[in-house]
Image (tube, rainbow, N blue to C red):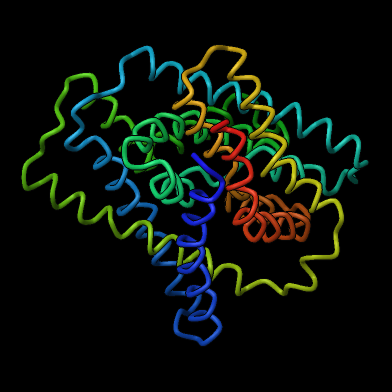
Length: 311
């Protein structure tokens, strides 16, 4: 996979993002509409895309491959946590912003943005692997991600509540359906499958338009003044994916699986971070700065990272 191929795909993906920014600035997408469309994508279209990834598959991943994906992504998060702690210590991040910067480095938008980008660059089969990788991603973000902002108040009861919330997510339920389909070889859903696939096709354009619209809500100058946000975004977009790639290669993971996991880990910051910062009274500005920089920079960093992943 050449740098040029990935760059062209990212340009293709970037045009709907730019359009989303334009229509939002023109007032054609209100915040209320964006909120409802985002909910529709997360609860309906994205799960449909996940389930449809198994339709018509002639060669399904074996149990060994699925375990490589699952534990490979788990290893990525352990590595990301270490990188987050080290980078924050080196940057001497103030205690009031520590949770935000750790979250920026650790958690990428693996599903909402990750799935459309993975499909565009690696194809539909790669989405099967990405679906499995999303399971540990959700488990971590709804437990450790929340604990970063809330602290350890509530103990194990709070962790269990986070896990229960995670298990209720339509996307995670869809991922489990995919696992059952792969285990049973049931990939032909007939006209029902055609309908699900049709609904899933709205995910990519909708998610990219929403990504562009989200950029339009930021004040660019105020988002570019924190040097720590640049370092944290670089950790999220470049350092964690490349370090994880080296780690997985040392484990002997299959190259195709590495490419998917590296690409998933190279996504911009997960939007949950801003919501958690607001909910638990953390400083939202560094969270928003890191999110903004990572969204814009990812258009350039993803081809760079994938060039190394394919080498």
